Image (tube, rainbow, N blue to C red; front, side, top):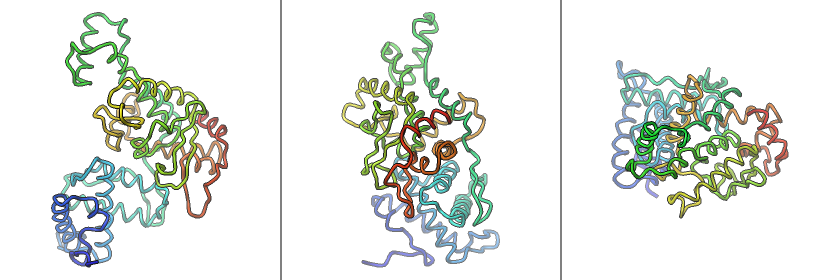
Length: 367
């Protein structure tokens, strides 16, 4: 195997990124990386004094930003170099709440590397992280932590999001206004809007996504990956096969509230009416017929916060974190690990130490 190409002693294109990109993308990414690595090594530490970072620091920052790009490609639907502050916020938050339990030193370096990355990009506004990391060995504290009251408000907002008034209760004038709204929403002529479109607007897709995510602490990738056969309505549970379990190597049984199971049952029945689901087991698709991703879920949670009058930014990962925190508080750590499908090398998670029924009762209490 030939030695990898290097710039300033730093690997230009790491193997995982090389495998991800096609030839055209590889040329574009290589050009970006050459400029970025030279900037790190020659002036990144203090551009005015033309003072670069030490070699080990430049190499570390280059590695971190490569992983940041690769994360974005996997979560944003493909190759791009157009990354924004919101992407960095979400990436750092996922690092904080990762099952790998990264050290404070690693998280501190990720934060510094991303700040340097946006300086290189010459962004007008300096990136200010949504997560405060006090020191390399210190604790992390997310600013967008979801409280119990906010969890309940998000559940209620999901029942309101995207709905339209009852058809029979509207005057002809108002009915025409709402038809125009639905025509824009579904990209079809006004005269083609039917009662089915009206019912679709008041359907159960969004309540099922939000309530399931609040119960199961679904990662964004798991929302996009979820399949119909995961759903066990009768037993109010998700059954995630080993082959589809994100970051794990076991089958998982995840408790759901009975109310959530009812929303899922209604959605599975409604889902059969839409042609875009005819040849797929995907549980949820966007209106553009794509699996949900971090960006589409960011739009959804922002809309829910507006309805719920939550006057701050929340990420989808904050939902997962709150589920684990409150589950641990209501039951114990074993229950939280089972509910969130964690697997640590030093802790066996093969057996569910907290009964499914106990965890369902905890979900009812935490809302």
